[in-house]
Length: 181
Image (cartoon, rainbow, N blue to C red; front, side, top):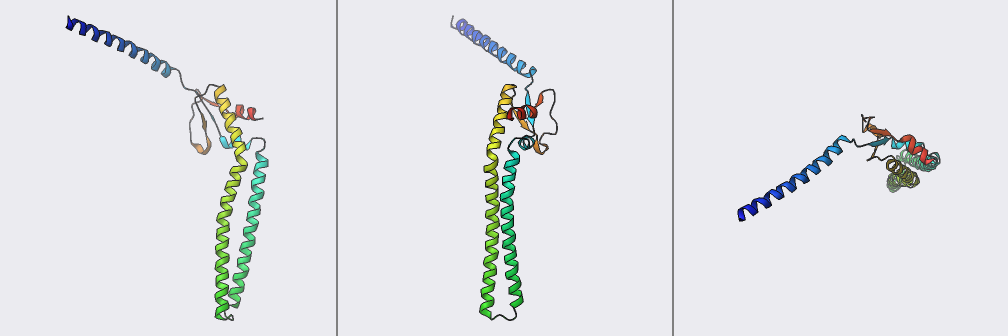
């Protein structure tokens, strides 16, 4: 009696598992036969075609030019001080010569420090100026992806994807730009 009961329970469990596996197998089969759709666009091209990009780029370039002008002025000041040092090197007493060397060293260190700070400040400024545009672009990509039922949207910049299957991939550039206007 116990053997029969145990065999019956085992058969019932095995039958239940088989039904579960069959249902899981059907879901996998359906997923395999239904291709995943994705979108793609060049993020940089979309960003450059956005309203407001030219103004933001102009703002970044103006600040870049201001730093470049200051760097040129600093280099000219160093060149002038160095030329005076070389010119008077033979006639300066040793204490003046040492003072001028220290001044040149200080000017060079200040110039290098300013260059480092300028690079960092320019990068931070560009990020700050461009971030609202990137946020708008990201939102537009999200909306287009959701509206079109896409699994994801790829950024094709830098030739990261040399081949995208046009049967399952959709170029969403026009949709994104239309949404942004």
